[in-house]
Amino acid sequence: MVKAISERIELRDVDDVAPEIVAEAAAAALARLDALGVSPLQACLSQGRLEAMDDQGQLDDEEPAFADHGVVPSHVEAYGAAVDAAAAVFAARGVGPRTGGIIVTVPDAVLAEERATGNDLSVAA
Image (cartoon, rainbow, N blue to C red; front, side, top):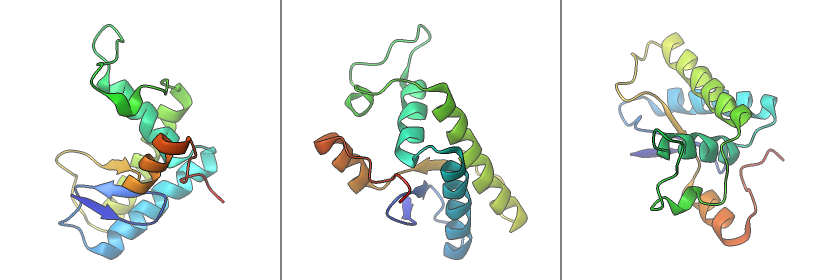
């Protein structure tokens, strides 16, 4: 399940965590991405494409969401930094490790807009 945090970023699979902790963790993840100059969409698409590749670096043809985007190493690193920032908040607030890890994502509207127009609504203002 996804928890909406803002119009720019969401954390997934955190239904068992208090909303104020989720909001704080998402804000930390977003601040880290903003500091690195990477939008949440850029980070998520590069990480998603990396995860969708097979052992030979080929992208599964059935993954259209990633078709027009390459894997940008700095964006993958930024994704990891955002996850680390959210994890630090969870740890500081006494939330145990997430079984499936922390998943940073963007709202559906951000992805839909990017697919329709190429505009990234998750870019910092």
